[in-house]
Length: 263
Image 1 (tube, rainbow, N blue to C red):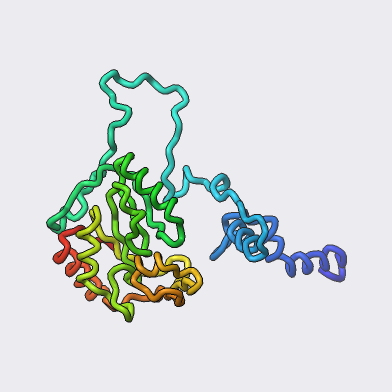
Image 2 (cartoon, rainbow, N blue to C red; image 1 turned 90 degrees about the vertical axis):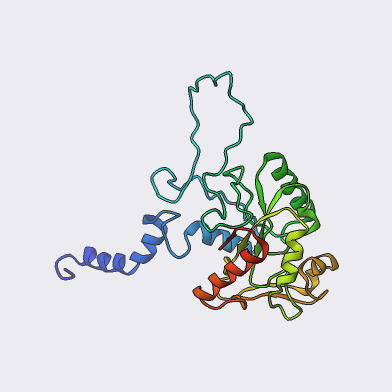
């Protein structure tokens, strides 16, 4: 190859050498690479440099032909609704939470669309208040997030109480789980279900750390942690250590509170 076609031969070896770079920047799309796509890396780089990190992540994704995406499609030529149709009619869940396990307070969620977990502390009190009051107006449920049940969650919306590895709001001074405190929290708010969060999604294996400067008197009181001291969310639970003990823990919470308990 090099003797008969030296230019092409050397070009071939050069292209082979830089092949990974060519595939990275030219051949593959912005969503293909793993474990982090080019779009995700761009967001990380911009965030690290304190640059504008506003990126749209949705328009390049093939949501119609790839499993795992739920989407709503408009109807270009919609027919008229029946006269008897109520535009505010609810769309309840098909599943009764706690029904298969016979929980004392099993119920059918009034809506299939609900508000997912976002903690007070990561969101402001005004944001949590708005979300909870919106949940009350819409007839949906509001997941508290693992940061504990705050006064801002008491705007009338039904709640799913999330319990993370630090057991905020239902913990002892050493961070271990306290069942009596959990029962007090559940009894004093419209908690319809309990959700056990197994790990720190954005920080796998490491847990999370809230710097002491951010642990205000209000947050300390809600979470049951020392004022002004670094607050660690461990990477693992201390109330259970394997699947069997986790299921025992689920049954304990359900038996003591009567609520559906999910993981």
